[in-house]
Length: 125
Image 1 (cartoon, rainbow, N blue to C red):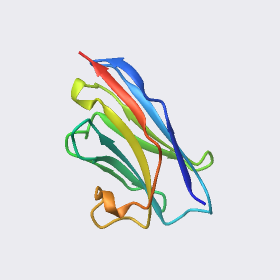
Image 2: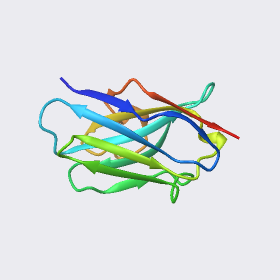
Image 3: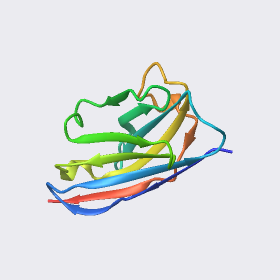
Image 4: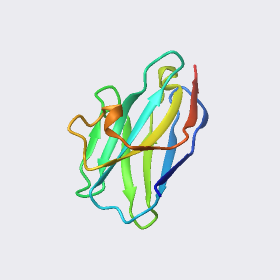
């Protein structure tokens, strides 16, 4: 039974930083991918960053490249999303999700089978 739990969200001023954590549990995982998505009110869920647990390859949406960093601690079964230089438009509920294998379209929501409950990130101006 796969479970994902996000943590680390909160309120931060524009220009600040937050580190989100996604801890996953379940069967041994090697050929899986973990993605971070966010959803603002009235908007569709969109991919932010992702990583392959198999080879460690990382992926970033263009708007987040250079500001966000995804990393993995397999021993802790946790994927982190370090978010720097935050902007008010980064305000959203952030979700992590797990895919069996790396999706062909890495940020396709339908490519991920398991989802966490989300954590709120609010960036004030």
